[in-house]
Image (tube, rainbow, N blue to C red):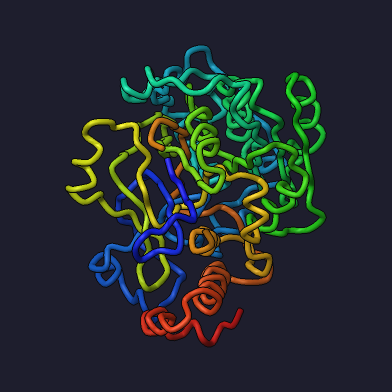
Length: 418
């Protein structure tokens, strides 16, 4: 779980508490060629990007065109909702194995969302998940729901698969205290998939939970879309989730309890891993904290021995970390406004987690589908250019006399502008 406070913390303007996600090293493509010239130089630096939607390499822009080359997909294929669950498939977080015929189909459609769409469509929207919390977490008691704050859960999506989006929504509904779940806000970042229009509206209207759907009139990106949701929120706390997550039992109470203790805490769950090919639910590694290098890329660092030892008496303690990954977190709504929310001038996604960390508990678990690359395009600009521009803005706004370290590692960033 991640936490950020305004308490004093050496070498940081705030405190952020976070636990882990996938730590394998993946090749970066279409990014700052002056820094990452080949795979070997990348691996020697051990740099890993984890930005909101996925871990791994940045999107290859040529993959954005799903109607070109070997990825020839017509309008009907892209807009087909093939959700057809099979009894027992993926239950208790188990992997789903396909027949050879379905496996071939899954390879053909993988590029649409950069995960196994066929497998996802075989799994029920309300599938069961294992309770992977520590024994101490399962037996830990929190304040009664009536004494905890309410929260608005904000989920931004752009052409998300119907099954992953609705499993995210259903997991929130089924595993959150009703008294604390004020509302779910779905923000449609100008999706073009037809099943995300009327079909989605009809389904959420039947769920018996207050769900708002807000639609952008143009592609605005993750950052501005989250701000659209925050502006409509009525809960005491804002909880941001990606659109391909699954919340586990007891995920919400630790987040709200920590904010109840300190309204200036920003908290994240442990991010568990949902395998992008089998959708098996895998427990995330907990003893890590977030940081960044001088290239302003988010990285995971193992906890030092003294911090691990200090937790031996109570492994449910939150882990203090200077930076959060940014995909999933909760923050007091008024405090979010006090620190200036996100930087409105940042585009699409990338760097916002570093920027908000500069502004400003391991018993909560949420699973996230980690994709090797993004399936989405970036209107009018290449993905690497957008990310570089956002990071350049972070350096110029926040790093003062230390920004030369960023320019030394990414000298061509000066040519991009922000």
